[in-house]
Image (cartoon, rainbow, N blue to C red; front, side, top):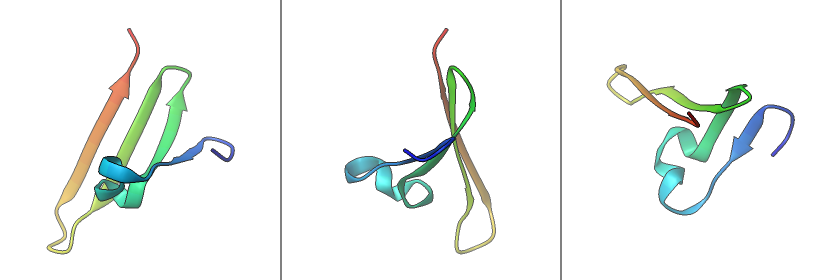
Amino acid sequence: MSGNQVSFTGNLAVWNGGRATLTKPDLMEFYWKNASGATNYFAFGKY
């Protein structure tokens, strides 16, 4: 973890190279474009 950036290895590495952003205290987002240019987005939150 560095600032609001989190890096994962293992299974989560396939999502944006394992890089996620903490955008709110309880929200972690993975956002990237794949090889064909489509946007991929996953978010995990604590509610």
